[in-house]
Image (cartoon, rainbow, N blue to C red):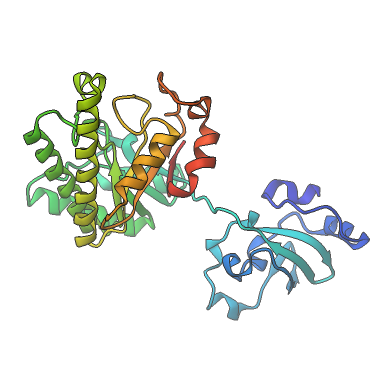
Length: 324
């Protein structure tokens, strides 16, 4: 199994003596050779795949490339059962495929030019996916500044082959109470900010936005009546944003659980309840963006709330983006 240990393929226990021949696989094993079937349609099936051997790896007939997006699949999505000559027996796993990306908040003030941060992402960090921080562009900027920046961003990411997965609040927005401000006019202003963010996201050609949505004042947090009242307002505002997102063609709203108890959700159970309620009559799905460093609130319901693995176990399926 030495040849496979470095590429994330985990064989099952031997099913025959022939299994030992898998040790003869070349060091450079092209996992794409046997991933030309969508594993969601082949999960838990055992299947024999004929492949052609060439030098330091395997390949598959060129015509298959025309029908399948091979690079979509993670090499750990299959389990190799045995290898005999040019026949690989595999079983597809029901697994999550993770794509490594970066939030470009690292570029704030230092590399505000789209070409500068894009070049760093593409050539220094060598990743393809970006979560765009609105610290680099206030979505309420006026034209022609806003349109000029968005056009430059779109042109630059196209040149470098970068994909912006989602847009997100940064440190600037995190400094405000936003959708839970005690003053209703300030909450209205926060709604306007987020609708501007949705509009800017659409203009960037991106399908999801979100981040830090709200923070309670201390007065509202310690008063049960006020806390329940402002939480209901938050949920209604999130639903309004989800419908605005739908009208602009977005696919989801992202909500980041925080480590501060005045910034819901901060517990696993609380996140489940709020997420379920936010999605009642929502325009687009409201999803989470779990930050594995945020499972540290001083007030919690269970010790599992302090365990980042527990957050993934309980809510990973509701979090298309994970901050690590």
